[in-house]
Image (cartoon, rainbow, N blue to C red; front, top):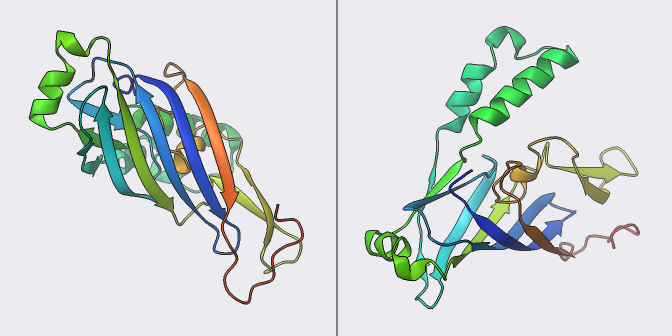
Length: 203
C-alpha cells in the first residue's frame, strides 16, 4: 500500500508446531510525514490483538484496526465458473487479479485527529513513527506448510510457502513491490503442550 511508507520491519515470531499456529509482534518504522490512516496487508485468518503507534518524540497511542472488505473484491475478480478450476493458467490470472484488488491493504488503522494533524505538520518531516502490532494466526493454510513424518502425526518442521501474496498471510506488511524496506526476523518455537513429545526435527 502506497500509504504505508515503511523503512524497517522487525518481527518477533513464535511458531507452534503442535497447534499449528503463529503468534507475532511486528515493529514497523515508518517514514514521515504520516498519512491520516495507515493501510497494510494482513490475511483474513489473522487477528490483531493490539496496535500502537509511537511518533518520534511523542507519546504512544493505541489504534483500532478496521478490516477492509477485500474479500468482496476478490470474489468479484474470480468468476464463479473458475472457482474450482484445475487449469494453472486460469488460476494464475485469477490469483494475480485478486492480489491486485487487495493491493491497497486489508487492514486500515486510523490515526486520532490530533495525531494525524501533528504528524502531517512541518515539524514531523524529520520524525516518523514506529507501528507496533501484536497478532495471532490460527489458520496458516497457504502461508506456512507443516511437514509430517507420519500421516496424521505432529508436524516435524515447517516452512513458508513460495507463492506471491503468501507473506501477508503470516506477517503484517505492505505486500507490494514498490514498498521496499529492510527486514529483521526473530523466530522461536513455542513450548510443546504438557505430555507432548517434542519432534526430533523441531529445532
